Length: 380
Ligand SMILES: Cc1cc2nc3c(=O)[nH]c(=O)nc-3n(C[C@H](O)[C@H](O)[C@H](O)COP(=O)(O)OP(=O)(O)OC[C@H]3O[C@@H](n4cnc5c(N)ncnc54)[C@H](O)[C@@H]3O)c2cc1C
Image 1 (cartoon, helix red, strand yellow):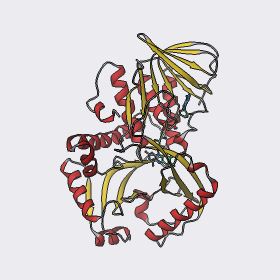
Image 2: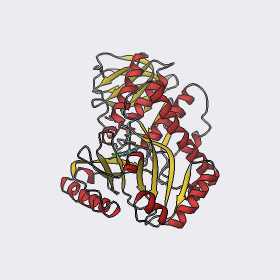
Image 3: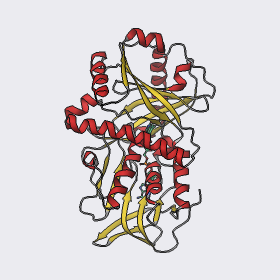
Protein backbone atom coordinates (compact mmCIF):
# COMPACT_ATOMS: atom_id res chain seq x y z
CA UNK A 1 0.00 0.00 0.00
CA UNK A 2 1.42 3.40 -0.94
CA UNK A 3 2.27 5.58 2.05
CA UNK A 4 3.94 8.95 2.15
CA UNK A 5 6.04 11.00 4.55
CA UNK A 6 4.53 14.18 5.97
CA UNK A 7 6.59 16.86 4.23
CA UNK A 8 4.40 19.89 4.80
CA UNK A 9 1.53 21.12 6.94
CA UNK A 10 -1.82 19.78 5.70
CA UNK A 11 -5.48 20.44 6.31
CA UNK A 12 -8.24 17.81 6.02
CA UNK A 13 -11.78 17.13 7.18
CA UNK A 14 -10.77 14.19 9.38
CA UNK A 15 -7.41 12.98 10.67
CA UNK A 16 -7.28 9.35 11.76
CA UNK A 17 -4.39 8.47 14.08
CA UNK A 18 -3.50 4.78 13.66
CA UNK A 19 -3.44 2.61 10.54
CA UNK A 20 -4.56 -0.71 12.03
CA UNK A 21 -7.88 -2.46 11.43
CA UNK A 22 -9.80 0.21 13.41
CA UNK A 23 -8.24 3.06 11.42
CA UNK A 24 -8.85 1.09 8.22
CA UNK A 25 -12.59 0.55 8.83
CA UNK A 26 -12.85 4.20 9.90
CA UNK A 27 -11.03 5.44 6.78
CA UNK A 28 -13.04 3.19 4.50
CA UNK A 29 -16.31 4.52 5.89
CA UNK A 30 -15.37 8.20 6.15
CA UNK A 31 -13.53 8.47 2.82
CA UNK A 32 -16.88 8.38 1.02
CA UNK A 33 -17.67 11.96 2.03
CA UNK A 34 -14.66 13.44 3.85
CA UNK A 35 -11.11 14.39 2.94
CA UNK A 36 -8.88 12.22 5.13
CA UNK A 37 -5.35 11.82 6.42
CA UNK A 38 -4.43 8.55 8.17
CA UNK A 39 -1.25 8.89 10.24
CA UNK A 40 0.82 6.12 11.78
CA UNK A 41 4.11 6.17 13.60
CA UNK A 42 4.92 2.72 12.19
CA UNK A 43 4.34 1.15 8.79
CA UNK A 44 0.59 0.48 8.50
CA UNK A 45 -0.76 -2.76 10.01
CA UNK A 46 2.19 -3.46 12.24
CA UNK A 47 0.37 -2.83 15.54
CA UNK A 48 -1.87 -5.37 17.23
CA UNK A 49 -3.78 -6.03 13.99
CA UNK A 50 -0.98 -8.18 12.61
CA UNK A 51 -0.90 -10.20 15.87
CA UNK A 52 -4.61 -10.93 15.80
CA UNK A 53 -5.85 -14.50 15.53
CA UNK A 54 -8.95 -12.99 13.89
CA UNK A 55 -11.87 -14.97 15.19
CA UNK A 56 -14.52 -12.61 13.83
CA UNK A 57 -17.19 -13.34 16.40
CA UNK A 58 -20.41 -11.69 17.39
CA UNK A 59 -20.30 -13.59 20.71
CA UNK A 60 -18.72 -11.15 23.09
CA UNK A 61 -16.47 -12.07 26.02
CA UNK A 62 -19.04 -11.56 28.72
CA UNK A 63 -22.11 -13.81 28.27
CA UNK A 64 -25.40 -12.00 27.66
CA UNK A 65 -26.65 -13.14 31.08
CA UNK A 66 -23.47 -11.93 32.83
CA UNK A 67 -23.37 -8.62 30.95
CA UNK A 68 -27.00 -8.06 31.99
CA UNK A 69 -25.83 -8.28 35.61
CA UNK A 70 -23.41 -5.42 34.97
CA UNK A 71 -25.29 -3.07 32.65
CA UNK A 72 -28.91 -4.26 32.83
CA UNK A 73 -30.71 -6.66 30.47
CA UNK A 74 -31.90 -3.99 28.02
CA UNK A 75 -28.39 -2.70 27.34
CA UNK A 76 -26.86 -6.17 27.36
CA UNK A 77 -29.34 -7.28 24.67
CA UNK A 78 -28.51 -4.27 22.54
CA UNK A 79 -24.77 -4.89 22.91
CA UNK A 80 -25.12 -8.50 21.80
CA UNK A 81 -27.46 -7.69 18.90
CA UNK A 82 -25.17 -4.89 17.77
CA UNK A 83 -22.17 -7.25 17.67
CA UNK A 84 -24.25 -9.69 15.64
CA UNK A 85 -25.11 -7.03 13.08
CA UNK A 86 -21.51 -5.76 13.01
CA UNK A 87 -20.23 -9.15 11.87
CA UNK A 88 -22.87 -9.11 9.12
CA UNK A 89 -21.77 -5.59 8.18
CA UNK A 90 -18.14 -6.74 8.00
CA UNK A 91 -19.14 -9.56 5.65
CA UNK A 92 -21.16 -7.15 3.50
CA UNK A 93 -18.22 -4.75 3.20
CA UNK A 94 -15.83 -7.57 2.22
CA UNK A 95 -18.29 -8.87 -0.39
CA UNK A 96 -19.25 -5.42 -1.69
CA UNK A 97 -15.64 -4.30 -2.06
CA UNK A 98 -14.55 -7.72 -3.40
CA UNK A 99 -11.82 -7.93 -0.77
CA UNK A 100 -9.73 -11.08 -0.82
CA UNK A 101 -8.83 -11.80 2.82
CA UNK A 102 -9.74 -15.44 3.32
CA UNK A 103 -13.05 -14.51 4.91
CA UNK A 104 -15.04 -17.65 5.71
CA UNK A 105 -18.33 -18.09 7.55
CA UNK A 106 -17.89 -20.14 10.71
CA UNK A 107 -19.99 -21.60 13.50
CA UNK A 108 -18.69 -21.24 17.02
CA UNK A 109 -18.46 -23.84 19.75
CA UNK A 110 -18.43 -22.30 23.25
CA UNK A 111 -17.48 -24.98 25.76
CA UNK A 112 -18.51 -25.08 29.42
CA UNK A 113 -15.51 -24.26 31.60
CA UNK A 114 -14.45 -23.09 35.03
CA UNK A 115 -16.04 -19.63 34.69
CA UNK A 116 -19.45 -20.80 33.39
CA UNK A 117 -20.57 -24.40 33.70
CA UNK A 118 -23.19 -26.30 31.71
CA UNK A 119 -26.18 -24.91 33.65
CA UNK A 120 -25.04 -21.34 33.06
CA UNK A 121 -24.54 -22.12 29.39
CA UNK A 122 -28.00 -23.63 29.08
CA UNK A 123 -29.50 -20.43 30.55
CA UNK A 124 -27.24 -18.37 28.31
CA UNK A 125 -28.39 -20.17 25.15
CA UNK A 126 -32.02 -19.62 26.17
CA UNK A 127 -31.44 -15.91 26.77
CA UNK A 128 -29.75 -15.57 23.39
CA UNK A 129 -32.44 -17.50 21.54
CA UNK A 130 -35.09 -15.29 23.17
CA UNK A 131 -33.62 -12.27 21.36
CA UNK A 132 -33.19 -14.06 18.05
CA UNK A 133 -29.51 -14.98 18.24
CA UNK A 134 -28.72 -18.32 16.61
CA UNK A 135 -27.38 -20.24 19.61
CA UNK A 136 -28.20 -23.79 20.59
CA UNK A 137 -27.23 -25.52 23.84
CA UNK A 138 -25.92 -29.06 23.47
CA UNK A 139 -25.36 -31.53 26.31
CA UNK A 140 -22.35 -33.79 26.86
CA UNK A 141 -23.57 -36.67 24.66
CA UNK A 142 -24.28 -34.46 21.65
CA UNK A 143 -20.96 -32.70 22.20
CA UNK A 144 -19.13 -36.03 22.12
CA UNK A 145 -21.10 -37.35 19.12
CA UNK A 146 -20.86 -34.22 16.98
CA UNK A 147 -17.44 -32.92 17.97
CA UNK A 148 -15.64 -35.68 19.86
CA UNK A 149 -15.14 -33.25 22.76
CA UNK A 150 -15.55 -34.29 26.38
CA UNK A 151 -17.11 -31.42 28.36
CA UNK A 152 -20.29 -31.02 30.37
CA UNK A 153 -22.02 -28.90 27.68
CA UNK A 154 -21.56 -26.23 25.04
CA UNK A 155 -23.29 -23.61 22.94
CA UNK A 156 -23.18 -23.87 19.15
CA UNK A 157 -23.79 -20.56 17.37
CA UNK A 158 -24.03 -19.58 13.72
CA UNK A 159 -22.94 -16.52 11.79
CA UNK A 160 -19.37 -15.74 12.89
CA UNK A 161 -16.36 -15.84 10.58
CA UNK A 162 -12.59 -15.85 10.33
CA UNK A 163 -10.20 -14.15 7.96
CA UNK A 164 -6.83 -12.47 7.59
CA UNK A 165 -7.06 -9.11 9.39
CA UNK A 166 -3.93 -7.61 7.85
CA UNK A 167 -5.12 -8.30 4.29
CA UNK A 168 -8.57 -7.00 5.19
CA UNK A 169 -7.20 -3.78 6.70
CA UNK A 170 -4.78 -3.23 3.81
CA UNK A 171 -7.62 -3.59 1.30
CA UNK A 172 -9.85 -1.19 3.26
CA UNK A 173 -7.07 1.39 3.36
CA UNK A 174 -6.50 0.96 -0.38
CA UNK A 175 -10.21 1.52 -1.07
CA UNK A 176 -10.05 4.65 1.10
CA UNK A 177 -7.02 5.82 -0.88
CA UNK A 178 -8.96 5.31 -4.10
CA UNK A 179 -11.51 7.72 -2.60
CA UNK A 180 -8.76 10.28 -1.99
CA UNK A 181 -7.55 9.43 1.54
CA UNK A 182 -3.83 9.87 2.14
CA UNK A 183 -1.87 7.52 4.40
CA UNK A 184 1.15 9.04 6.13
CA UNK A 185 3.82 6.82 7.67
CA UNK A 186 5.96 7.07 9.71
CA UNK A 187 4.50 10.06 11.45
CA UNK A 188 3.95 10.18 15.18
CA UNK A 189 1.25 12.42 16.60
CA UNK A 190 2.85 14.00 19.64
CA UNK A 191 0.12 16.36 20.80
CA UNK A 192 -3.38 17.45 19.91
CA UNK A 193 -4.96 20.82 20.65
CA UNK A 194 -8.56 21.63 19.87
CA UNK A 195 -10.40 24.91 19.38
CA UNK A 196 -14.00 25.67 18.37
CA UNK A 197 -13.22 25.12 14.66
CA UNK A 198 -11.17 21.94 14.78
CA UNK A 199 -8.03 20.21 15.99
CA UNK A 200 -4.33 20.78 15.36
CA UNK A 201 -2.06 17.77 15.61
CA UNK A 202 1.63 18.31 16.26
CA UNK A 203 3.78 15.61 14.72
CA UNK A 204 7.37 14.41 14.97
CA UNK A 205 7.74 15.32 11.28
CA UNK A 206 7.71 18.95 12.37
CA UNK A 207 4.59 19.73 10.30
CA UNK A 208 1.14 20.21 11.75
CA UNK A 209 -2.04 18.49 10.63
CA UNK A 210 -5.14 20.61 10.83
CA UNK A 211 -8.46 18.76 10.82
CA UNK A 212 -12.11 19.53 11.50
CA UNK A 213 -12.15 16.31 13.54
CA UNK A 214 -9.66 13.74 14.75
CA UNK A 215 -10.28 10.07 15.51
CA UNK A 216 -7.68 8.25 17.61
CA UNK A 217 -7.53 4.58 16.56
CA UNK A 218 -4.33 3.82 18.43
CA UNK A 219 -5.11 0.28 19.56
CA UNK A 220 -3.73 -0.46 22.99
CA UNK A 221 -1.23 2.37 22.85
CA UNK A 222 -3.70 4.69 24.51
CA UNK A 223 -3.30 8.25 23.22
CA UNK A 224 -1.79 10.67 25.70
CA UNK A 225 -4.38 12.74 27.51
CA UNK A 226 -7.26 10.35 26.75
CA UNK A 227 -8.73 8.94 29.98
CA UNK A 228 -9.45 5.20 29.92
CA UNK A 229 -11.36 4.50 33.16
CA UNK A 230 -11.75 0.80 33.96
CA UNK A 231 -9.46 -0.25 31.12
CA UNK A 232 -6.28 -2.24 31.47
CA UNK A 233 -3.71 -3.61 29.07
CA UNK A 234 -3.01 -7.31 29.48
CA UNK A 235 -0.81 -9.85 27.67
CA UNK A 236 -1.94 -12.73 25.49
CA UNK A 237 -0.25 -15.59 23.63
CA UNK A 238 -0.90 -17.43 20.39
CA UNK A 239 0.71 -19.94 18.08
CA UNK A 240 0.23 -21.70 14.76
CA UNK A 241 0.87 -25.25 13.58
CA UNK A 242 2.52 -26.09 10.30
CA UNK A 243 0.19 -25.90 7.24
CA UNK A 244 -1.94 -28.94 6.41
CA UNK A 245 -2.52 -29.77 10.07
CA UNK A 246 -4.57 -32.97 10.37
CA UNK A 247 -7.73 -32.25 12.32
CA UNK A 248 -11.41 -33.27 12.50
CA UNK A 249 -13.48 -32.03 9.55
CA UNK A 250 -15.85 -29.97 11.75
CA UNK A 251 -12.94 -27.80 12.92
CA UNK A 252 -12.59 -26.31 9.42
CA UNK A 253 -16.06 -24.80 9.83
CA UNK A 254 -15.95 -23.93 13.54
CA UNK A 255 -14.28 -21.46 15.90
CA UNK A 256 -13.77 -22.94 19.37
CA UNK A 257 -13.50 -21.14 22.70
CA UNK A 258 -14.34 -21.93 26.27
CA UNK A 259 -16.08 -20.40 29.27
CA UNK A 260 -12.92 -20.43 31.37
CA UNK A 261 -10.62 -17.80 32.74
CA UNK A 262 -8.17 -17.62 31.06
CA UNK A 263 -9.77 -19.25 28.05
CA UNK A 264 -8.32 -21.38 25.30
CA UNK A 265 -9.46 -20.71 21.75
CA UNK A 266 -8.60 -22.09 18.34
CA UNK A 267 -9.52 -22.13 14.69
CA UNK A 268 -8.19 -23.38 11.36
CA UNK A 269 -6.56 -20.86 9.06
CA UNK A 270 -7.10 -20.82 5.29
CA UNK A 271 -3.70 -22.43 4.75
CA UNK A 272 -4.59 -25.40 6.95
CA UNK A 273 -2.71 -24.17 10.01
CA UNK A 274 -4.33 -24.62 13.39
CA UNK A 275 -4.16 -21.29 15.23
CA UNK A 276 -4.44 -21.54 19.01
CA UNK A 277 -4.36 -18.85 21.67
CA UNK A 278 -5.06 -17.99 25.24
CA UNK A 279 -3.36 -17.92 28.66
CA UNK A 280 -4.05 -14.18 29.06
CA UNK A 281 -2.27 -12.57 31.97
CA UNK A 282 -3.16 -9.28 33.62
CA UNK A 283 0.19 -7.57 33.04
CA UNK A 284 0.88 -5.11 30.24
CA UNK A 285 4.45 -6.19 29.41
CA UNK A 286 4.59 -9.97 30.06
CA UNK A 287 4.11 -10.47 26.32
CA UNK A 288 7.68 -9.24 25.76
CA UNK A 289 9.20 -12.01 27.94
CA UNK A 290 10.66 -14.73 25.64
CA UNK A 291 11.00 -17.36 28.40
CA UNK A 292 7.34 -16.83 29.24
CA UNK A 293 6.38 -17.30 25.58
CA UNK A 294 7.87 -20.81 25.69
CA UNK A 295 6.09 -21.69 28.96
CA UNK A 296 2.76 -20.27 27.80
CA UNK A 297 2.97 -22.25 24.55
CA UNK A 298 3.62 -25.47 26.47
CA UNK A 299 0.53 -24.82 28.61
CA UNK A 300 -1.61 -24.02 25.57
CA UNK A 301 -0.46 -27.22 23.80
CA UNK A 302 -1.29 -29.28 26.92
CA UNK A 303 -4.77 -27.76 27.15
CA UNK A 304 -5.38 -28.33 23.45
CA UNK A 305 -4.25 -31.93 23.73
CA UNK A 306 -6.60 -32.52 26.68
CA UNK A 307 -9.49 -31.24 24.58
CA UNK A 308 -8.56 -32.83 21.23
CA UNK A 309 -6.40 -35.86 22.15
CA UNK A 310 -6.38 -37.09 18.54
CA UNK A 311 -4.77 -33.93 17.15
CA UNK A 312 -0.97 -33.96 16.95
CA UNK A 313 -0.09 -30.30 17.22
CA UNK A 314 3.42 -29.22 16.28
CA UNK A 315 4.17 -25.53 16.85
CA UNK A 316 5.54 -23.82 13.75
CA UNK A 317 5.67 -20.33 15.24
CA UNK A 318 4.35 -18.49 18.24
CA UNK A 319 3.85 -14.92 19.30
CA UNK A 320 2.47 -12.71 22.05
CA UNK A 321 0.81 -9.34 22.15
CA UNK A 322 -0.89 -6.67 24.21
CA UNK A 323 -4.60 -6.72 24.55
CA UNK A 324 -7.10 -4.32 26.14
CA UNK A 325 -9.68 -5.31 28.70
CA UNK A 326 -12.58 -3.42 30.23
CA UNK A 327 -14.86 -4.34 33.12
CA UNK A 328 -17.75 -5.13 30.77
CA UNK A 329 -15.73 -6.44 27.82
CA UNK A 330 -17.32 -3.64 25.79
CA UNK A 331 -15.13 -1.22 23.84
CA UNK A 332 -14.77 2.48 24.41
CA UNK A 333 -15.92 4.54 21.41
CA UNK A 334 -16.38 8.06 22.66
CA UNK A 335 -15.59 11.74 22.32
CA UNK A 336 -12.39 12.67 24.15
CA UNK A 337 -13.30 14.58 27.32
CA UNK A 338 -12.16 18.22 27.31
CA UNK A 339 -11.12 18.06 23.66
CA UNK A 340 -13.63 19.28 21.12
CA UNK A 341 -13.91 17.48 17.76
CA UNK A 342 -11.93 14.47 18.99
CA UNK A 343 -12.98 10.82 19.28
CA UNK A 344 -11.07 7.84 20.65
CA UNK A 345 -11.69 4.21 19.74
CA UNK A 346 -10.45 1.41 21.97
CA UNK A 347 -11.69 -2.03 20.96
CA UNK A 348 -11.37 -3.95 24.16
CA UNK A 349 -11.89 -7.68 24.59
CA UNK A 350 -11.56 -10.71 22.38
CA UNK A 351 -13.78 -9.08 19.75
CA UNK A 352 -11.57 -6.14 18.90
CA UNK A 353 -12.21 -6.44 15.17
CA UNK A 354 -16.00 -6.64 15.53
CA UNK A 355 -15.70 -3.49 17.64
CA UNK A 356 -13.58 -1.79 14.95
CA UNK A 357 -16.60 -2.14 12.63
CA UNK A 358 -18.97 -0.74 15.27
CA UNK A 359 -16.58 2.15 15.95
CA UNK A 360 -16.58 3.15 12.27
CA UNK A 361 -20.39 3.17 12.33
CA UNK A 362 -20.77 5.12 15.59
CA UNK A 363 -18.13 7.74 14.78
CA UNK A 364 -19.14 8.26 11.15
CA UNK A 365 -22.77 8.76 12.19
CA UNK A 366 -21.66 11.39 14.73
CA UNK A 367 -19.40 13.18 12.23
CA UNK A 368 -22.34 13.33 9.81
CA UNK A 369 -24.42 15.00 12.49
CA UNK A 370 -26.46 12.01 13.68
CA UNK A 371 -26.53 9.90 16.82
CA UNK A 372 -26.04 6.14 16.61
CA UNK A 373 -28.85 4.47 18.64
CA UNK A 374 -26.27 2.34 20.49
CA UNK A 375 -23.63 5.03 21.04
CA UNK A 376 -24.42 5.09 24.78
CA UNK A 377 -23.29 1.47 25.15
CA UNK A 378 -19.72 2.36 24.32
CA UNK A 379 -19.20 5.44 26.50
CA UNK A 380 -16.75 4.55 29.30
C1 LIG B 1 -2.65 -12.25 20.05
C2 LIG B 1 -3.90 -11.49 19.77
C3 LIG B 1 -5.02 -12.17 19.37
C4 LIG B 1 -6.20 -11.48 19.08
N1 LIG B 1 -7.27 -12.20 18.62
C5 LIG B 1 -8.39 -11.54 18.26
C6 LIG B 1 -9.47 -12.27 17.69
O1 LIG B 1 -9.41 -13.50 17.56
N2 LIG B 1 -10.57 -11.56 17.30
C7 LIG B 1 -10.66 -10.20 17.43
O2 LIG B 1 -11.69 -9.62 17.04
N3 LIG B 1 -9.65 -9.51 17.98
C8 LIG B 1 -8.52 -10.14 18.38
N4 LIG B 1 -7.48 -9.44 18.91
C9 LIG B 1 -7.67 -8.01 19.12
C10 LIG B 1 -7.53 -7.26 17.81
O3 LIG B 1 -6.39 -7.72 17.12
C11 LIG B 1 -7.40 -5.77 18.12
O4 LIG B 1 -8.57 -5.33 18.77
C12 LIG B 1 -7.24 -4.96 16.85
O5 LIG B 1 -6.15 -5.44 16.09
C13 LIG B 1 -7.02 -3.51 17.23
O6 LIG B 1 -6.82 -2.81 16.05
P1 LIG B 1 -6.49 -1.27 16.11
O7 LIG B 1 -6.45 -0.80 14.72
O8 LIG B 1 -7.42 -0.63 17.06
O9 LIG B 1 -5.03 -1.22 16.78
P2 LIG B 1 -3.59 -1.49 16.13
O10 LIG B 1 -3.62 -2.55 15.10
O11 LIG B 1 -2.66 -1.70 17.29
O12 LIG B 1 -3.25 -0.15 15.40
C14 LIG B 1 -3.00 1.05 16.12
C15 LIG B 1 -1.98 1.85 15.33
O13 LIG B 1 -1.88 3.14 15.94
C16 LIG B 1 -0.54 3.58 15.79
N5 LIG B 1 -0.32 4.63 16.77
C17 LIG B 1 -0.48 4.56 18.11
N6 LIG B 1 -0.20 5.77 18.67
C18 LIG B 1 0.16 6.60 17.66
C19 LIG B 1 0.57 7.97 17.60
N7 LIG B 1 0.66 8.73 18.70
N8 LIG B 1 0.88 8.51 16.39
C20 LIG B 1 0.79 7.76 15.25
N9 LIG B 1 0.41 6.46 15.26
C21 LIG B 1 0.10 5.89 16.44
C22 LIG B 1 0.29 2.31 16.03
O14 LIG B 1 1.57 2.43 15.46
C23 LIG B 1 -0.57 1.24 15.36
O15 LIG B 1 -0.17 0.95 14.04
C24 LIG B 1 -6.28 -10.07 19.21
C25 LIG B 1 -5.15 -9.38 19.64
C26 LIG B 1 -3.97 -10.06 19.92
C27 LIG B 1 -2.76 -9.28 20.35
